[in-house]
Image (cartoon, rainbow, N blue to C red; front, side):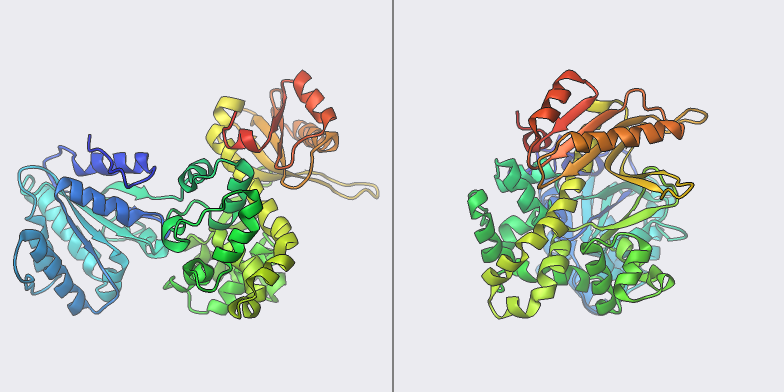
Length: 493
C-alpha cells in the first residue's frame, strides 16, 4: 500500500484506486483514464503518484504538434537524466521510448491535459492504442508500464473511450475525480457550523482549489462574517474567484456561441429547469436549444435529472455552484461589480441569493444526503431524485400536482411494485410544520393508488431553519416520520 502524501486532503478512495492500478502485478502494459471537472485536484493526485512511485509525469499545454512533441521530449530527457531534450521524429517514436522506461517493477507514466495533445494531433489516440496493443498482445511481457492519460475537458475525455474510439475497451481504470462531498468540503474548509458550511458550499461547492488558490485560505470566521466574506472574495474584482463563473464556460472548446450558452445557464439558474421553460426564458424555440443543452451536459456544467415518478419528464440543473452563483447573482450586476461596488450589489442580492441559490442548493444537499446515507435510514436505495406526483383532474377539477424534493426509491425488480423508501420535502428558510408533513402524506396516498409500495415509506422533513413543536411531537411518536436538520445533515450529533 502506497501511503497518501499528507498534502493531499481527503481523496482516499481515489488514491487507493490509482495506486492499485499503478502497482498491479499483471505482466503486460495497462492503460487508464482519469477525468473530472477543472480545479478538483487531479494534477495533485497524478504528480504525487509519479513522485511516490518514481514514474514519469508530463503536463501538456496548448500548442502546435511539433512544439508539444519537443516539450514531451524535454520532459522525458529530464526524467532519464539527459542534459538535453530527446529529439523524437514523431509521436510513435516518442511513445515507443516512453513505453520502454519501466524496469523490473510497474511504473506509472502520466500524460496530463491529454485533450491538448489530441487537438494538436488527432491521430494520437490511434497511435497510443497501437503501442498498447503491441505490448499487451503481440509482445506480451515486454513492458509493464502503467499509462495514465488525464484531462479536464469532459466533452473530449468522454469521447476517448466511447463508440468507435480507438482506445475503447483498452482501459483498466476509468477514474472520474468528483468534487468533494458536502461533509468533506466542510471539513476541508475547516467550517464546523453546519449553517455556515451550507452557505459557503452553495457558492464554491466541493472544489478544493477554491480555498487555497482562489481565496488564499480566506475562510469565513462565523455566520456573522459570511456576508463580508462574500464581498471580499467572490464579489471582489481583484480575486480570481470573481471571474471563475465566466471562465469555466470560456474554457470549453466545444462552445462556439458563448452568449447563447450564458443565456441558457442564466435561465436554469433563475428557476427554469425544464426544456420548454428554458427555451421560453431566452426566446428560442424548444428545438433550437437541444444542441446547447447537450454540449453543456457533455462539459459537465449542466446535469439532466429524470423525474422520480414521471418517466418522460426531466429537468436541468447547473452542476457547479460557482456557475449558478455567477449567473443568478453576478451577471445581472456585472457592470457594478467591475467598478468596485461589491458591497452594494450584495445588499441588493441577498434576498435573490436565498431564493434562487440557497433554496435549490439545499434541496440538492438533501438529495446527496439521501443518496449517501439513505440505506442506513430507509433500506436498500435504487434511486434518489426530485419527483412530481399527480392526480388527474375531472369534472371541472384541475390536475393536482405535488412536488417532492427528495424521493428515495428501492431498486427496480421485474414484476414487483416499486417501493417508495422515503418522500421528503426540503425548506431552507422556513420553520417546517404539520402542513409540510400533510403534503407528503397526500403524495404517499396518491402513489399508493398508482401501484407503488408505500407500506414502509418514511416521510422526511429536511429543514435549514428547524421544526415547530407540533411536528416534533408527531415525529417522536411516529417512526415513519423523520426530521433532518442541519446538524443531522452534516452528521453532527
